[in-house]
Structure formats: structure tokens, C-alpha cells
Image (cartoon, rainbow, N blue to C red; front, side, top):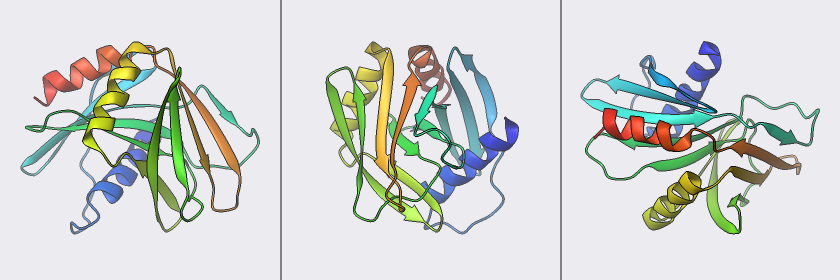
Length: 174
């Protein structure tokens, strides 16, 4: 698990700090496990941020080779709200988008590839807030996307523990 978390942090840092010089990734400190979600805190020089992450309970199609798959919400100290992101374990089809669904609520993410890694984010801060609120009240999150090879994927996450995990990072990174 430690290797997977380190890979996720490296992907997160690469995606969110692409303009910064690349150095050794800082080591995350566990803030705890909350049912299906884990919370972490990272201090990188003067910057501190926290994040929660989970891996899907179910992913389709089965048997397709993918790198580790994660859904994350990152919070930086001194910034309100959290930034949801999705690491699919593959590069995306160019120009494609990702859809996250909680009950009848749908959220669209833009995609970005860096080499063989893909990532997805929401453009609007208000939509980020709406998604996090829906996650707190929901029971499952379904994320769909399209790989560079044209494979349609569907990943289902449990939202059990998300509220406690988010409360923990809000406390650790006010």
C-alpha cells in the first residue's frame, strides 16, 4: 500500500505542481483510515496540504491492465474548499472528459495526460464544492472515462467514511 500511496502522491504532485522543479516527493503522514477513505498530510517546504483518497470497490471492464486507480480530494492550508481529482490508471483519449455520478447528480471533469499518466479535474470551484457536498451525502460515486485506446471504463467507489476523512483534513489543514 505504501508504494501505491507514494505513486499516487507522485502523480498528484506531477499533475498539480507541473510548473515547479521536480525533486524528491515529500513523504505523506497518515491522518487515519476512515472506513473506505484514507487521509494524509504533506509538508513540502513552506507548503502544507492534506488529501483524502480511495480506490474503487469495483472497476469495469475487468481484466484490463491499469495502473493504480484513485479518487482524491486535496486541500491546501489557507485555502477554502477541496479540489477533487481522479487518477484513472491510464492516459485518456485526447479531448475526452470524465463523468462522476452520485445518485442523480452528474459532474464533468476535464482530462490531461502527461506521458502515460492521465488525470482529471473540475474546472469550476462552485462545482468542486457541489461535488464534495454530494459525496458527503451519498453512498457511492461512479466515475466513467475513455482511455487513449478507446476503452470505456467505469469505477465505483464507496463513500463510507468520506465525511470523517474530510473533517480530518479540514482540521489538519485549516
